[in-house]
Image (cartoon, rainbow, N blue to C red; front, top):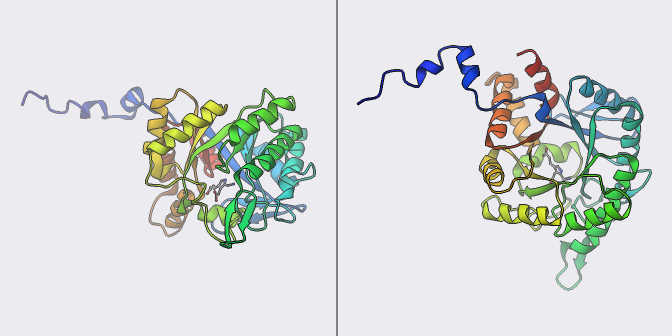
Length: 331
Ligand code: PBG
């Protein structure tokens, strides 16, 4: 057979050998922690479907961000639950909005962490859709009005930048939003603020727990008219190409785990930084199985994060960011 016994196995014999031939290195440098902010004071309310995650009032959230900074985590991404929702999602772009106030509070007290903001309407609209809803009187069907929504997203992005956001991350999937937001930021003196675009965002069942956490489940219909069909890969390349053309600095794939192939083809095809969103459902299934004693959470979580990195992601948005930062330190 001409193949010496143990040819491959002899490099796996001990941990030091394994370290030398290791191809993928997961580190705290790769991690971004999502956080949920709600009105009030002194509130840290557990999110039942996402153990270890909380809806926090601004004061508590700032304390948490300090801890994350101390762990060496490079960035957080913020999601807001506003005092009141309305048809136009007006809290999203108000100077007094929940996110705007949170950014300012973080920036007053925490110096060395990036504040990324999710730009979308779904947490702020009474109907829970990602944009402005237009009703067709004849057919009494509903649709999201793309161009009207773009105006709102630009206002939202500029107000986040004015409050001190470091990176703007549009997650709405309207056509033309990156270009519109880029232009809006530039016109208002924010040429230096990068855009992290949720470029390949699939209409996924894995967002279930997040919608509970952010109280953003659509009141009717679903998001299939603006999010991608899970059956498609080529379409993801078109979405990414367009976003880069329009000015995206970082492109994102979401979810991550069921879409590792998409991360890989984007990494191979474009030389732009790739972010992957390890979404709520991917987190909660592991938590639930671990609670039952069926799997080892730490081991599985690190394996999942490593696989996302190995697939080609430069950065990972993950609810494990805080735990993983600690696990990786004590390894
Ligand atoms: C939309 C948004 C969603 C998530 C992040 N931004 C939800 C959606 O499209 O319904 C999901 C993240 C997760 O599941 O962890 N603003």
